[in-house]
Length: 92
Image (cartoon, rainbow, N blue to C red):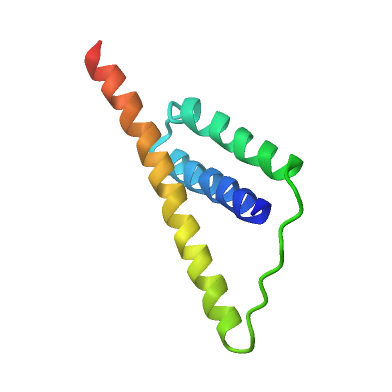
């Protein structure tokens, strides 16, 4: 489980950096950085995970599927943070 949390935190930061390079905005960092800190902290202090053993040709497909799933979660969290900031800005 802690590997998944670390991967999700890493992908959130990668997507945030891509958004920063394209739009030159740091405002989503208000939501992103605490989330990444929390995920990293929980991953670092958590228990050791149990091992899942995939055999043969299924190992590559499972890793690819996990990577795509967590990339989607990272994009979802970043867009959620950006939409919250947009709503707060529009309310003003």
